[in-house]
Length: 270
Ligand SMILES: [Fe+2]
Image (cartoon, rainbow, N blue to C red):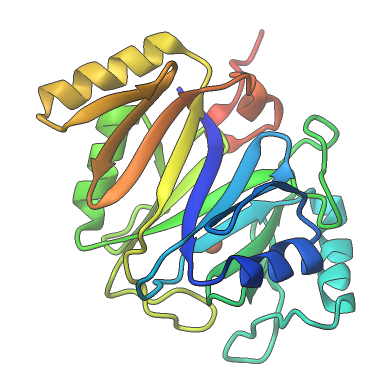
């Protein structure tokens, strides 16, 4: 199974610009930096990196999960920086309090739409809560597509993903802690009605099983989807114009169940 998002590689037109936001403001540790690339390590298991690109940027939507008990602190901390604008819903509120949790949105200097989200069902104290925002893991990456139905079916077939909030123009496709937010390009991103375009990005999924990786290879071959092994324990392929990697990592396979994620529940013992 896919356990988590291991890395998200985005494009930027200014390495210094993203450094000033993600390191100086959000305090993400920098683990690698060159003139054309920078890597941040918001948690032990997730890397956010930016590569310099000489082309127009398309904003990406991604969301970090924080413990429910830390959500208010995270919001206050964001506000206390004095430089981060929390985005408003049309009625003026900034925090959305929904059935299973709370969230808040803001943007980086490149226009990427970031979200801090917390769910009350997540067991706390299992994964370390990292940095000033107390981030547990990267929960969501947004995938605007022409056909939500086709893309979600592909992800289910290839990765055994579970689906939630299944609509014609929106779906969560879930593997472990990773939630692919599949949205129609005709549906705008909340809460600021931001046009959903397809960004250029590399999405690196983690898996703890080489058998699973072999299964994915077999399925890709059967579907005629080109794939290549880029290094030991790493597989690369493209789906719907998005560049994906599958990587063997040490992220525990039982972590999503330990966190009490709804689609990764441990079997009940009688
Ligand atoms: Fe989101």
